[in-house]
Length: 115
Length: 109
Image (cartoon, rainbow over all chains, first blue to last red; front, side, top):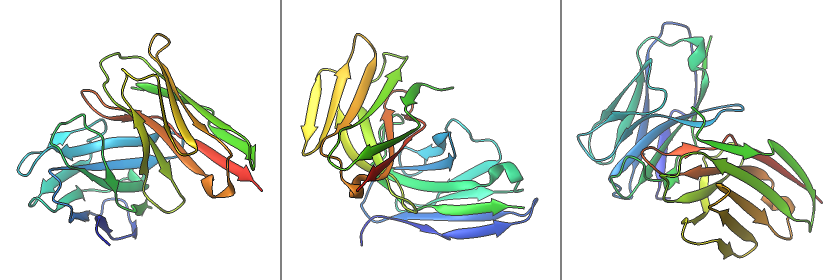
């Protein structure tokens, strides 16, 4: 099925380990986003990429880095994982390149636990 | 910073009843108010959206009402069904995009 694909679906890390969450979309969308979802907090924007070659911080960027590898792929990296980063991470995409635009399609998430 | 406040946090409705979820916003520099539906283990999916120059929008059993003077907008689910059981998020566009904190809806058969 066309859409947004995230890998891995589940991951357990130890404090201090690093990892990269992968995201790819096949809808030729310009904009891509990374959110984290925590109970009672809704979804909060970590980073977004309005178009290929650009990235910007969202509401909660500390402890994360991103790479917009090409138009299809947008990765999220945790350099030194902390227990506070235990969350469900969602990648999303939208057709246009405005920073405040609504994400149109979401992946099914990566459930990340940090011990 | 909470740009939009959503209530209630959880909601239980009998099959056939009306589910109502409310959101209130602060900043008036928003131009689009979407609602998302999320099933367990899945990402949110865009359900319905409204612009502030429209007071109501209906799609099937789902209706958004918008009250610009009160800075509020709400989602009504008519004839609620068990398949509507999910978490619903309001949201708005602007300089950035913000989600509400979500409402867990359970429709009892």
